[in-house]
Every structure is written in structure tokens, then in C-alpha cells.
Length: 301
Image (cartoon, rainbow, N blue to C red; front, side):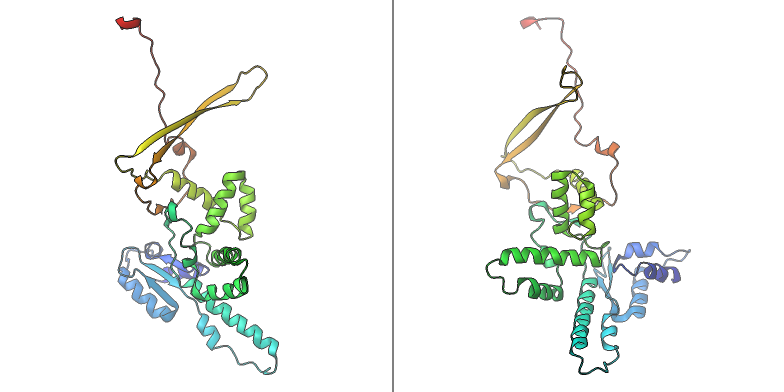
């Protein structure tokens, strides 16, 4: 299993792996069973590794790192009277503990939250130690503007987690911000700049989210619903002088009432790569049907 551990070493910056992906890294004729691999990992990494859904099909492996070793094995300071150095060491220890908690937590990467509760559980994704630190910094003594402070606390914590483990954490908050701004301004450059600063998801992540939304199955509508179809035309004129070169289009929406007649939304499966435009163009396509005028007229038809 040398190639197996080499794969882990090469991807040591990441901390969450699916067992199915790890098993694909094993080359050769003999492929060990999942139970054997788990035992080898436990023997090698001991308390530095955490397993989620160990007996299930999609076992998740999380590496906490060597945080407690670093704290417990650090050499004693000879400058006992150096208050500044002691304060800095406390901060370093706190950072190490928080980093371990971030790395050892499992986050869903194959599905998005339901649309009707997309931002409902953003605070539950934050490790407790990181939450205590940021609430103490941002929300302390903010009685008059507590709601605004809590929004900043949530966004900053999500940015920290995303920066720590970019490949295994999908922030609904950062994804929602990026999707809204891209929908409003249509600028991938703007999204890339905000993403590089940690304020938004990347343009690639937003594209995958849009494709996932477009290709998800329609939600089931219960009986006795009232439907209203609303259509309107749109004329795209490239030459406004003579009226030629005009592209006529029509779009419509389906309105359903009452609101609870639609079944509760479920998690949205995430596509793994961008869907080609040639396939997107077939989505929701209604073929044109030509009308042939009959030879007879009036009631004799």
C-alpha cells in the first residue's frame, strides 16, 4: 500500500477523503478490502484520524493532523517574564486547536441543501471552538447591532473554513452570495476577485451549482393545485433603424397555488463537472410544430 500512503502524503493539504476515492489510488492486482485499509490507517495514524459512516458504503476519512503533538511537545519557554511571548504562544495554541477541529469535521460535498432551507443551518457548520473565538471578537458588546454582528460572524467563519479546506467544504453562505452577484452583474471577473479575497465562492463552484439546479428533477405537485401560466414576448433588435434583424422570443413561468401544494424540497445532487452547452441547449426544449392550412374553409372543414 505504498502508493496509497503516497497519495495521502501528496494531498496532505486536504483533510477529508472518500474511501472510494482512496481505494482508486491503489495500483496493482491486489486491492485490499475496505476493512483492511481502515485497520492500516488506524495503526499508522492512531488518534490523528477520524472515520464517518465507517460501516456504510461511502466511508469518509478525516485527518485531524498533529495539533496536540505540537502543543504537548513544544519546548518550554526560557523567558518566563516575557508576557508578550506568552500571549503569542496562547494564540498559537488556540489556532492549533481550532485548526484540528476544522480538519476533523465532516462536511457534505456531494449535495447542496434544499432550496427552501439553503441558509437555515449555516451556523451548525461552524466548529464550536471557532465559534467561541469569533463570537468573542465580533459579537462582544454589540447589543444594538447584534444581528449585523452575527451576520459578519457567520460570513467570516465560513471564509476561514473555506480557506482551510477549499476542496472539501461547500459554504451555502459564500455560494449564495456569489450566485446572487453573478446573477445581478454577470461578471465572472468580479466573482473571481471576491473569491480570491474569501468573500464569495469561486466562479467554477457557482457554475456547477447552476448546472445542478438546471438538471435536477422537477418537484412533485400534489393534486388539487391551481396553475397559472404567464407568458410574454421579448424582441431583440440589432438594427433599430429599419426593424430588420429582429429576433422574436417568448418566455413563460408556471405559477402554482397554494404554496404548500408542492412537496417539500430535498437535497440537490451536485454535478461533478460542468455540463457542455450542447447538452444544456436540449433542456426544456419544446419542438416547433408547423401549421398547415387546409384546403377547405368554414364549417365544411
